[in-house]
Image: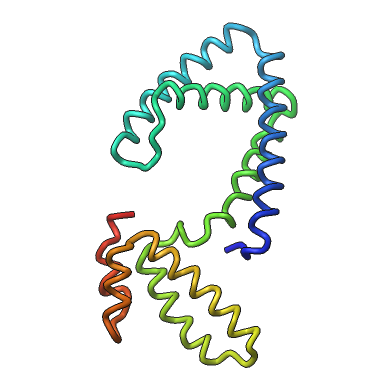
Length: 180
């Protein structure tokens, strides 16, 4: 997980780099691709956009219409093709590196509820073994992130858990794993 003090600058730099790469790719794609290639990319984007929109309906908090998703996919396809034309196969490494750079921003969202509960419980021993106030504060910040993510996922169960003394959080929270 990325420290809170670095999250904002990291996000800003990542956004600027991604926008620059994307803009360069889209411009190159629009200028260098033949018109029939753009038509086929458009058809592909429409088909994929409609299929993804249908698949996401009711299964996600992401509420994008088929047209919006198709437009985003078209821009992505043109940008990727443009990057491939400009820098050949290095484009895939560049896009892959940007995708990997997003991982620290995910925080605990990629982990299961059981994992977060187990980590929160296990960090109690680490907290008790802290030798300095600074070390203890660092552990407390980590524990707070776990609690914040658990509360975000399961607000009602989280409130119940806080009012139940001496209960392992996994007994109340992990049962609700499907509500992610």
